[in-house]
Length: 95
Image (tube, rainbow, N blue to C red):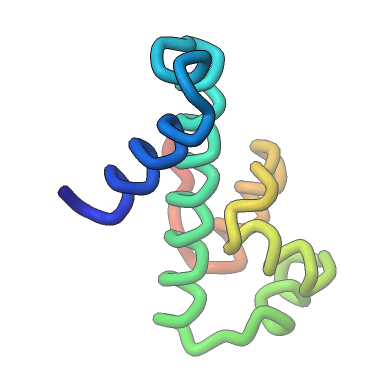
């Protein structure tokens, strides 16, 4: 069992029966996981290019805090923002 599986099971145990078979919980958990995965991809590409969060933010025309929140999985960017990120990271956006 990896750490993610343990965290999921432990979280459900703490929430009790209500979360064990709740489709809404599963949907929200999946959305959070996708936000985290996207943030990790942005972080990996940014560091591979040797950019700081501030430099990436300047390339995208946004503030560093927003880059930090994206990388941390705290927000899910819109498609226009994803396009700006892809251009700034010299990457392709395929949906």
